[in-house]
Image (cartoon, rainbow, N blue to C red):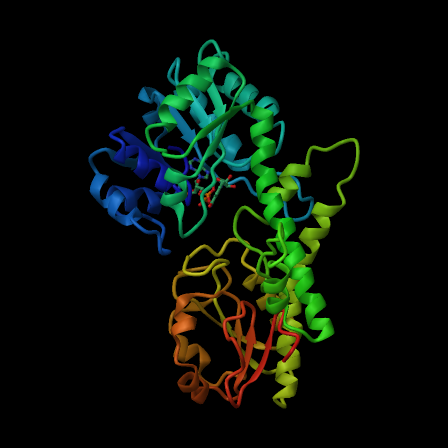
Length: 424
Ligand SMILES: NC(=O)c1ccc[n+]([C@@H]2O[C@H](COP(=O)([O-])OP(=O)(O)OC[C@H]3O[C@@H](n4cnc5c(N)ncnc54)[C@H](O)[C@@H]3O)[C@@H](O)[C@H]2O)c1
């Protein structure tokens, strides 16, 4: 298993649990050390994952930084990051290329290579296959087998999704397909849907694009509801009483490694026309942190304080509740905007550890001490369970900006604003 991240750790643990000898390879020595010590390197709440890594650590599950471990492997699964370039929105395959370069010379004849990373349509044909042929001095499909089996994991439910969800396997030759099905059947209960490389690439990026566009619509409806002065959540509830409608929940922004970049991967190789809807949805979703900053300024003004110089507590740095995953978190642009506008920002998160450029505290009461506003980005359970009247007494002003509709209605004595909460 190459890449011991949110995908690689549960996959390696599930392989070991199925009786397969699994070796995780990563360039990050801390992750390798953790797995070898029987600990999952992920710190968010991942049901059963810690126990599985502990149970199989040092026996059927090992980790190393050495690609030599691939020499005896019958199957090599690859799940390294595949981000986009911030400016051009084109795929950045630095990690994937590095893997293919290191794997080639160590690839066993007849082995199956399964690319689990999400990749732009055409990448298997144009990048993975030729790169691997060159670095291994072998030919596909004569000397090695190759499939694209994109993942459907999500933080907080990694193992559950891996085992239970259906999965698409893209293969361009029958032997690769047969071997991949035999392998994945050992760790999955969901159905396997075979197709070719290109279709699998499109399906994966399209399913995340679907989600992003739906979120874009929910967020735009929230902005509309705010503008008209009604509750977007009530609008959503009533819209969804109409058959075939399933509006998603709006919020402070869309984050994570996948959803903000997979739409760009999907359209990155198009040549005959420019997509309209997908970039527009991205634009709406990227706007939400800015809307949060505006709501914070409005709420502070209503409480008699200007944003410049105000002390603002950001609650939640992870993009998703009850996880430690802060990749592309909407908290990041929001904090930058608030700081640019002169606010003094402190950050709380119960799960996120270190984050380059940001100091994240785990002490909620300390972060709120003397704050002029609490700005909630992530609906961690910690915030649902918090004693807000008591925390409010520590704050200089009782201002709550709600990016996730955490409060059904404002507490007495508080100034409250929220995404989609046009009625307040
Ligand atoms: N996170 C998810 O829930 C999820 C879901 C579906 C698909 N995916 C896709 O799966 C892929 C991996 O995602 P992730 O969330 O696990 O990423 P991640 O960043 O958590 O993990 C990637 C790991 O790969 C390692 N790595 C990078 N270069 C390497 C190299 N040359 N050799 C060995 N290891 C290397 C990194 O150190 C890191 O530990 C991405 O393409 C992503 O889009 C992720």
